[in-house]
Length: 114
Image 1 (cartoon, helix red, strand yellow):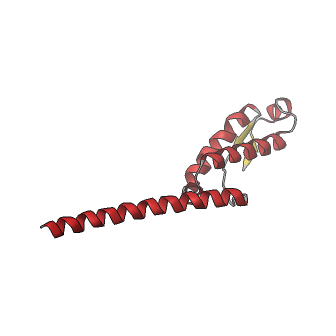
Image 2: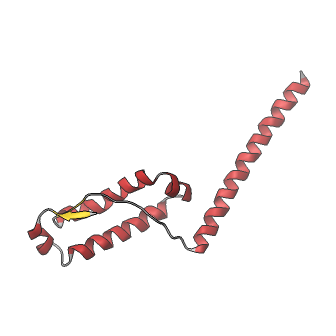
Image 3: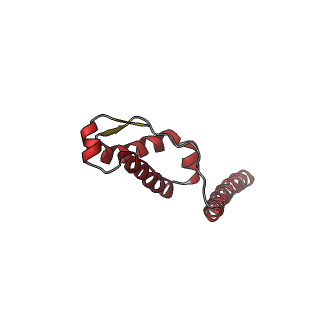
C-alpha cells in the first residue's frame, strides 16, 4: 500500500509511478525470498514485511511516493525450489535426531558406568 505525497515528483521524477512501485516491489520480493529460508518465510513474515517495506520505500521517496504498508500474503515457489527446501529441512531434522540420540547414548553409558 502506498500513497503519493508529492504529486509533482510523482509525475516528473518517474515515467509511471504505479508501474515503478510495482516493479520495485516485485524485485525486492524476489530478493527477500531468495535470501530467506522457507521457515523464515512462514514464521517471520512481520520481519520480512518490514525489510521489504524499507527496500521499496527508499527509491519511492524520490518519486514523491511513500509506502504505507507491505504484506506478504502468498508465496508460490517453483517445484524445484520446494524440493530443495524440503531436502534441506529433512537434513536439518536428521541432524537434530542424531544429536539427540548421541546425547541419550552418552547419558545411558554414564549411568551404566556408575
